[in-house]
Image (tube, rainbow, N blue to C red; front, side, top):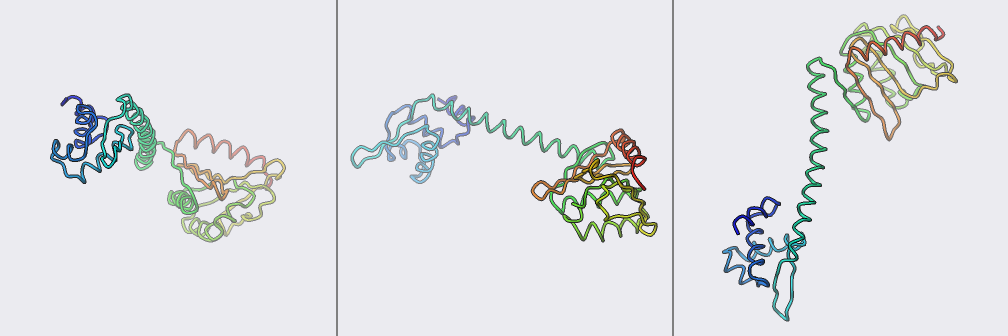
Length: 250
């Protein structure tokens, strides 16, 4: 019986629940006084254990007149616990792998290795831009039709450009010709070129420096920023930007 109790505990039952289950299996229908006598557990502890066993469909409650008895259900029901445990373990495994991937990216980024970060919501997206500015490298921007200004207006029009100027970061901008937010300005350390909105209905913001790429969408429900730090990917985005730069109108 010790092996059975051990197996039951491995399934997730605690010692009291396993002891009560084995007692019921050996003796059939049992009353609370009988279980108290045989287990040396308090009535409260027995009731609590029986509640859990009943909710797990391992034990059933039987009334015979004014008397209450308990007995085990068919032992096949133990398989349900094992199945639920397997499902739970699979869910935990998925969560763990997801967290490992996230932590691995943080490790890589903090150790100047290739990695990806995802930033959500206004605060997260602003944090992504702040990290870009902290690199103190010139920035190439492929801008949208003005969604950034609507989403984070003060940061877009005041904080970001002021911090950029303070750090002497030059900004080349490609934008749809309907976006007049960031015109060419020597004072603002910015040169802007435009592309016809019909050819370039862009709906996100991309910023590139020599270290990272930030891609941001400003849709309210799904606003997200993706940061990629990878020399080969950065290099190819720089090639793409330079190609568009040559096609755009000064």
